[in-house]
Structures are given as C-alpha cells and as structure tokens.
Length: 284
Image (cartoon, rainbow, N blue to C red; front, side, top):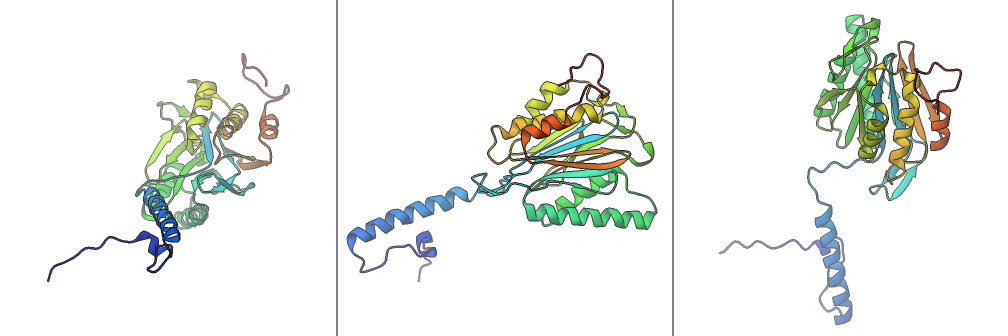
C-alpha cells in the first residue's frame, strides 16, 4: 500500500468543476473558468498583508492637537463606496481622541474597549489616565486583541498641564502629543503622523507646509493644514474621499466638526482676518 497525495480541485469547491459525461464545448468552457477561479484564489491569499483604506492625520501644536480623517467607508480596496458619512475620529475622555483606519467593526469594538479600560483606571486610581499610559494601553489592546485590520493615531493633551516631550526633544506647554499605533501594537510618538491608504500623499502635504517649527503652531494654524493634507490624499486615493472630520483637542476638551464636502472643510477651518495669525504667515 502506498500513500498518495491528491491535489485540491479548487473549481469543485465552488461547484464549477467539469463533470463526467459533459459535452466537450461546455467542458472546455468550465475548465477555463475553473483555472480562472483558482488563480484568483491564489492571488488573494496574501498571508500577513494588512490593507487599510482611509486617510487619517494628526498634528501636535503648542496649545493642543488637531486630527483629521475623511468620511468614506469602502469595500474591495476602494472599488465600492459603502458609506459616505463615516466618522473615523472618536473622543477618548476629555483630553484625547483616536483616528482609525481599517475594519469598521474592529474600530468600533476597539473604541468601546479603550474607553472602558480608561474609565476603569480612573475609578481605581481616582485620577484620569495619562496620555502616554493611554497610548501604551491602546497598543496593548491592539497587540493582544482580536483586531485583524486596525491602524490608529491617538493624540491629545496631558491633564493638569503636564509637559510632554516631542520626538525632536522639545516640550510643549500643555503636553500635546501624537502617537502612531501600528497593527501589531507598536507605539511611536511623533510631532505629526498619517495613516491609511492615503498616508503617503498626506505626509507629502504635511511636510510641505509644516516645516521644522511644528510645535510652535497653534491649533488655529494647524486646522487648515490638517484639512488640506486630507484633501490632498483624497485627490488621488480612491479609498478616501467625500467629507472630512476635524477634531481639535485642547485643555478645554475635544471639539469635533464634520463637513460633507472637502472644499467646504478647508475654507471653514481657515483662519480669518480677525484671528491671531503669526507674523509673516499669510491668511488663506
């Protein structure tokens, strides 16, 4: 007796394999379809590849942080728009917010869990969790949890005016910080960050407008920059688009604004003549 290994007939798994007694023309047609389906299955079985749509951006300033995200939810790698008014930024307490890209169900479950864990910490210790500890907690949840496709930007300000150190070694007055949390649970701090399928386009727009003095800009300066970066990404990335959600986090709390159109958002958050604009910067 000999062992025999038979190849898997992928076509028969889907009910399209050729059957005995079938006329020759129909048999050849089904054989071609059989080979086509098999190649599609092989092509889509990319183990370990994490694919996310969306464009999210977060920037730290001198008096707070600003987050931005588009409002399009898509399936099939951006080929089909499932929803045009998705809110991809959620507040976590009074001093932080998280922007997410990836699976909608994973994101919703994660936000509920992170809120519950941060509230539990507050009840047990009698004080709000620090921003750095919140980022570490978020990374641990992503690394240990059942979240398959999730990429996060967490940003906020420290409670009680505690200063936070930026990636450049500078400290901000209100402890404003941005944390980039990857799918594996890794946590990295930065002055600004972008994630999602439009992140490369967003990074290009951010680096072209922010310059080196990122931490000296106020949230009023940063809001049009963040909105413009998201708009730039949606111009080329098919998985991002429709409207924009802008979140401003300061010591006063979290403010969320949602705009149905990209141009409307950029114009609405732009500084006006009456606003406090730094010397040498143009009001746009």
